Amino acid sequence: MTESFGQVLRRLRGGRSVRDVARLASCGKSHVSDLELGKRRPTRDMAAALDAALGARGELIALAEVRPDQDPLAQADTLQRGLHETLTAGMPTDAGLDEIEWTVARHGRATRYRSERELLPELLADFGDLRLMLAGRQSARVRRQLTIAVARMSGLMALTLLKLGDNRSRAWWRTGRQAAASAEDRATISWMYAQEAYQRYYGGDMEGAVELAVRAQHLAGGLPCAGQALAAPLEARAHALLGRAEEAAAALAVAEKALERLPAEEQIGSAFGYSESQLRFHAGNAWTHLGVTGRAREQQARALDLYPASDRTDRSLIRLDQAMCLALDGDLPAAAVHATKTVVDLAPEHRSALIIYRAREVATRVPEMREVRVLREVLALPTGERDSGADQPGDRGRH
Image 1: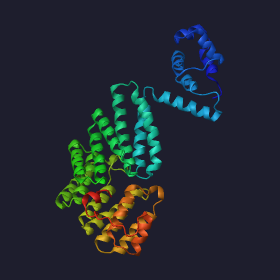
Image 2: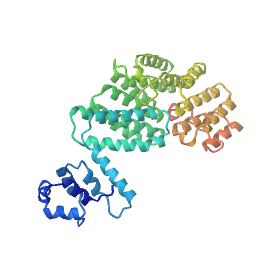
Image 3: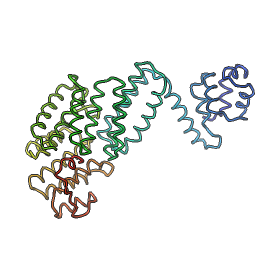
Image 4: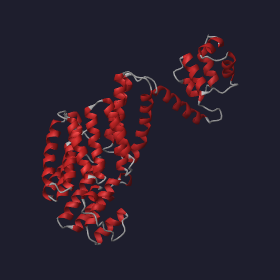
């Protein structure tokens, strides 16, 4: 940490002559001497040449980026970043590939209990590492594993941006699809289309959501995978918003069978899995949109029993569906109170765009009264605001 570039160069040179090192690095003898004595600042190219000549494994490259005028802690940060990038850009070992897969899986689980704003910086940092690895030379096996990791991470980026209400999520779906297709992994391609169907759904494009959900199921074929388990209930929800009760019921029946066939290790709380708690939530949501409140309540109650308390987003969306059922059954004050409590009980960092959209839908269903005024204040809606298009499937789909 306290050694300069010149001191490390001298240490690594060891018993070799300056002339020998200069010849290996294709530079002049005086250049190497000047670097050792601190009379010259190394360029990145020169540092890379000397690093390769002396087998320094990135140490000289990292030190070349440290400025003498930096304070020690800043020098330490610069050195760490340089070493990290150099090591990351190397050929991944089997242990390194296992670490990548574990990291991607960890992020998938984190989507169930961490806020999007907490998750995004870590996703970006790990994605930066993946990009460095992918830029290097690898065997076909290693490149395929890295590409699958890129596809999955792209999906996580898209989901995170979607929950933040950022339309740049659409570009990440394209990147994820390209990566999944390049890896020729049918399960991953199916998962990508299923997740992108949710983007269309929350964007109000119900026909597009159905199209992508059907595509995901077609790609899955007979393969028991999360893609089909995710896509079938989403298809049901889109049909429900379009008022197609028979199609919605049929898709829910397919979803039940898809969950039964899903391997136990994929029936988990993760963006890469699907569980009974999610199916009950999604089925309840479909029945809510169809106005079949009795069946909706059964599914909602079961979902809340199954979901862990840490899964704030889905639990809150279920409670907002309960509020909508109250509104549909005519108990408007109770609907406003239930929706208000759902939002207030969430910490501000967990009040995602999806939560606010859904709560606002409840607010537009309830006429002006004291209870809804409180809800409007919580949601920062102007008093008396009404959504004249709230009954249109495309508008409701945004929520």
